[in-house]
Image (cartoon, rainbow, N blue to C red; front, side, top):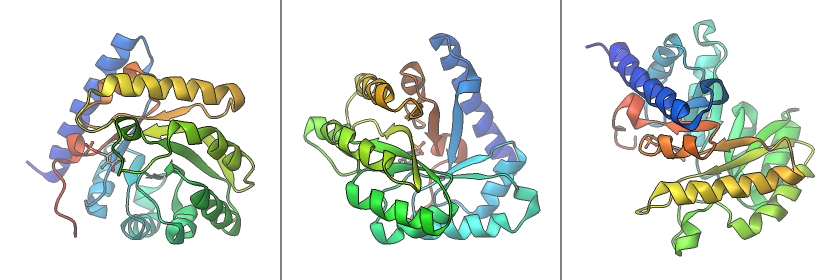
Length: 237
Ligand SMILES: *Cc1c(COP(=O)(O)O)cnc(C)c1O
């Protein structure tokens, strides 16, 4: 089987899961964006995915993402890709990410808001961002980034006051070693509370290969799916 056939199979299987879960939840698949997480995989896979209709791709390391975005932007055959930055982000990488990212999912602290705002303004862009919520912090564990629910309102106010940024919603990763569903339900309540003050913050990024059904039932608008489409990730290069 060719790599393109392999990717097509993975994509078909994920799209079928999304359709089934949307049917169960009484939602339209048109409300859902499948972000295919291509981290660690070569730009050639992104070009193959583009031919299969994928336009939204997710990356979590600036150097790798920037190189792929530059390479693929030069090729008219891969026009229209949208880049989702989903990883923990250092301040010194913020200006770079602000140049090519279409949506940054992982804004979680005041220093990063300032750096992204500055970078976006220098790039003469208005950058869409999500606030990442740390659902692990509730279990006393943390390590994958994210603001505590308690810190969200002030972070939201800071983004809303940043001329280079646009607050579009929330993102989270399900807590380790616990059922995803109650965590995503909490995330949905936090998102609803945020929308009272910021109606444009209507996006909810939740759900990965293992738990996209739970996320869709809880209102996710953006799924971040890697291994279910691309297979297991190659070791860090
Ligand atoms: C890698 C990654 C994903 C994709 O995970 P899979 O289990 O391969 O679907 C989603 N979200 C984030 C934040 C990631 O780092």
